[in-house]
Amino acid sequence: MCARLEPRLEAGTHIRRQLVYFLAVARTRHFTRAAARAHVAQPSLSKQIRSLEDELGAELFTRVRGNIALTPAGEALLPLAERILSDVDTAKLEVQELAGLRRGRVRVGAPPSLCASLFADVLRRFHETYPGIQLLVQENGSRDLVQALHRGELDLALVIVSPDLVEGPLSHTPILREQLVVASAAGADWPGERKTVALSELRDRSLVMFRSGYDVREVTLRTCQDAGFQPQFAVEGGEMDAVLRFVEAGLGVAIVPSMVLAARPLLRGVPLTGTDMSRTIALAHRTQTAPTNAARAFRDVLVAFVVEAARSGELPAGVEMILA
Image: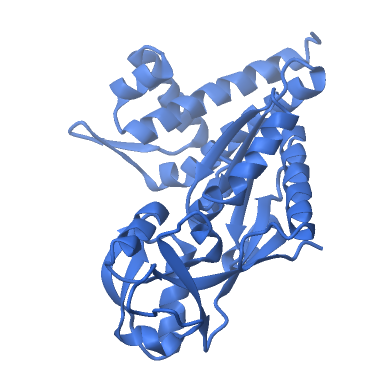
């Protein structure tokens, strides 16, 4: 190796080690547990943390009576350290892909409504096409997935388009538009066999509501408030499966994405009138980092699957392709 490069590589390895140790302490808030997590002796970890603080010219942790907390400087470093280490790992995998040493890895995220429907079929096709590429899937609300993209924890994510997504440092491609419907237990007295439900009729109905972080929750609250009323909750705080099960049990109705009802024979979905309650689903990635070969392959498989499903009429009810 060229002698001029050796100090740079050694310095890069040194900084990476310090950031790994910093994140271990930040996540455990305990030096001994952090050392065990990082597989290093506790005195060595403490020494590296002090060295990092000296290099940055600021303390990263407060140490009062054994309680460890991040200082403002530590809080500022935390997302940067997460992103730097994630990018290093991604770069390593990309080089290994090109060198033929490994097939690669792709980290993808999707909301629960998609994971319970067509996303599973996309994953199956990708795995069949690229069996050597490791698939890591994160199921979460769009807001949480966007944050995971910012932190470099995901390569790609299917998310719901929002002002934060449009204005943030992410690139996104709209793919699908989906209607939101009122879900009720099949055979329930309300809405019975009606074909549509007016938004105003939800004023006096008990709703089953998702936990904070779900875009459907935010859309529902905002739409009802714009219509002049505050929705009543029978129960709130659930994940997608829990919300659907609560509706099946007759606890109330819920506004849900239409595609989640495809495999729920005990539920019925009725479109809303008086408002356009739909959402746009896009594929997003960070603009600062080009997608890896594996991520680009996943995008191609996803797009091909959606196009084929749209042409053959196999998209779930209430879903249409808007891919340009």
